[in-house]
Image 1 (tube, rainbow, N blue to C red):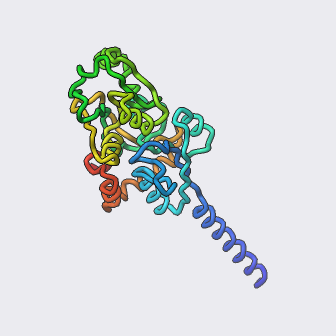
Image 2: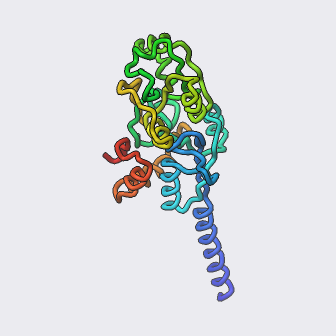
Image 3: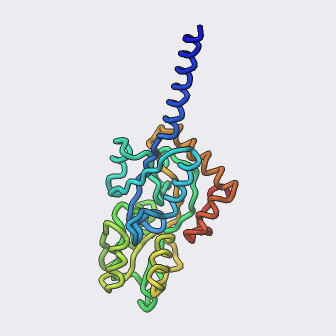
Length: 260
């Protein structure tokens, strides 16, 4: 009987250890554009950092998961998600117009699409962009706004440009803006503010907004279980102030909307 009891105890302990190991060994792989500061990018030390990655790291910490940061080609994000190489897209990912394509968390950032120009460009309103060279990131919300057939004023604005060049990332577009190859760049306001601050000024955001949108964490359509876990953890973070602390660190306090 002692041997049998001992065997049962050993089996139970093994099952418990296996369960713990499974929980502790779970990885959470976040797909992100590594050229999209302040949400996700590579810093000067070669580390992937950003607002969204900090949020994801805290979610993983509270759930006993290992965070895997996976930089992706933004054009291939759907293939990465459907193929299972990432668990979610978390990188300033716009929900608007994609509501039925992914399983989303609640929105956590209110964002706008804007134009950035040099301070001395003489451009102060949309009408001043007529005939100008404008840059935008491929497959971005700003490009979608410019091509939105339900917003004829945006189509007319786009058609007034002298040229519209699509870039793989905003850093390259900003380099062309600095060099004078572009007159304006259409982009997310959070990214615009970061780019301007990191360059020590010299640029301004036009007051007029091209479009307004919200960011969410996007999961494979139907993956509600994982979404619900992340959502619940974000709610805890909002309630205990951690969410606000991370937003303040990245200069996004005025943009966050989760839990408000």
